Image (cartoon, rainbow, N blue to C red; front, side, top):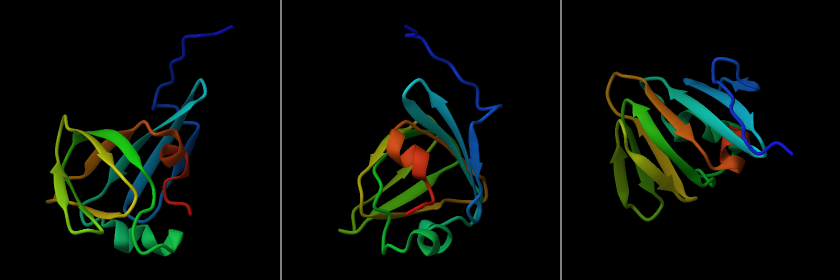
Length: 120
């Protein structure tokens, strides 16, 4: 029985390209991990909302920011900004956008969200 797994993002199992977004997905054992690159000007409510049809993002996100910055606002009005090296958990019910003119690269480890990013 195999108990050690590794997969490189240079050969993703799947790539999705919603507007201003590149999602590279790798399946590692029974887990799914994603590398998400958000281009400057990316905003969930403008780029992803049309594809999923909800008022705010209804996925849980667990990950970390490798580069760039992302600002996230919950439906209740609370907000957070994350940058390089920050680990995060965003619960369902939020909007988010790239801060500044640099792309934001994040790695996400919550398997359902990683596998279905940009889908309903």
